[in-house]
Image (cartoon, rainbow over all chains, first blue to last red):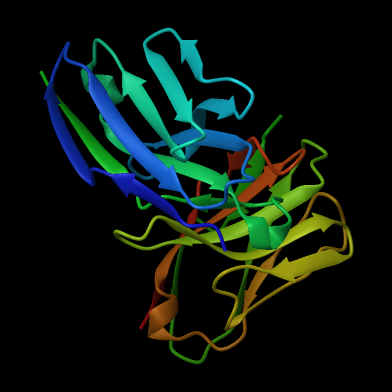
Length: 114
Length: 111
């Protein structure tokens, strides 16, 4: 099945700095790569996603880059704010489900220090 | 729209008891999934459904049953609860298997 590895597991940055989280995937046919943010006590929420026909996508302070050759994608958060503190998950479609469900990375706990 | 609604939010079970975790969505999504979340392990797929009457197993299906009699509802049944099933359970729905919407989760403790 699909294997998604995520690094780092924890990340602490100063407010205003940038944060980068990286994921690798194993299924070369994967074509959709979402990022989820999970706040304490809540369910994951989609914050940005990218499809395999583009290399980068931006939405205000958040961007995702994709390198299909190397099979990795990254989340970039610029000008971090305390409210960015949360757990972030990357994901990719699960080949064994006909890509009808997602395989998640193990998560990155981001702490933004005021 | 309420999105994806899960009940209950918290539950404590004794070993061997059975229960059903409820999940309902009002977005007319065909795809629904159940995940469990354990510390340091991300979310792991238990079962999924691509439409009413169609279900299939995910990565960790043992000890769980599902059914999908309507597009809106996708309950998860624990047949005989075990301490290893202590976890946070999330239900998700999506239109095409890509952009998934999650419920708020059910925190289950089995003692």
